[in-house]
Length: 281
Image (cartoon, rainbow, N blue to C red; front, side):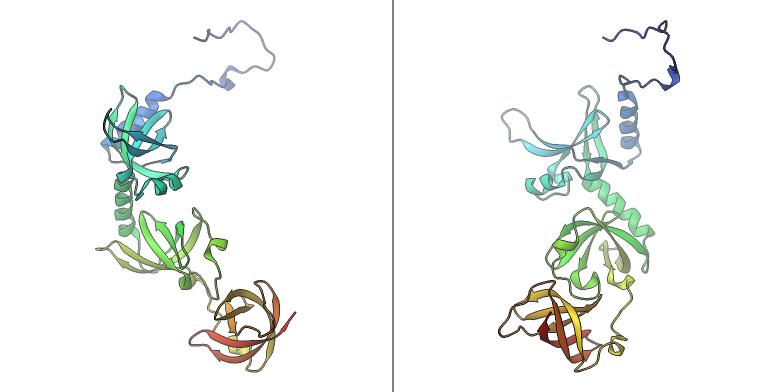
């Protein structure tokens, strides 16, 4: 046990009010926070600090996410985390999550909690506040080949690749990561199904209606290869405007190559420009 501070020692510039107390115990304050959250169905936030397998001796042990309020340990059983399996739960470690306290055991300095219950409450609050036309941040939870899965206040939303921005997107993984936020516009709400449709593209100016003033049929323009697929080569003429060209017969091009293309056709309604590569710069 630490000895009491000797106040008879005189130190130049010492101010007792500025003493850093490293031994201060906030346990009771933490328990008050847990009690209040339990009694008032309040949502708490903390990162997933680990995974433990819990069970009675001789019985199968079940994985639980570990969260902490101060030094007090909380357990969220796998089925209450929103993860489908242990692999998904591992991918969530370190992430700050919402949870609600289900029970507590002060004697063993432990509480149990539910993330799914907290998300249901968040979703209900969000649906009451959200309106079509609102602009809101959406936090990316998963990046797939053709869409982003994001979170708006407890509601999962899917942002298809063609609703992210104008122009060709070659690889979502190269541009977006889990945990990032993207600004979106609410396009439709189904309160009964808790389904919300959003678009990031709807917040951007459409470059296509007047692009015919900048590009003419048979005109030749410098562009940058924005993607290569088996059916053709995408060439970016300007932000949001990509043309599709056929592959060259005797030469391959790669992403980021500069090329000269000749315009064969412009379709503003379908937002398509067909071109031919006439030179690799």
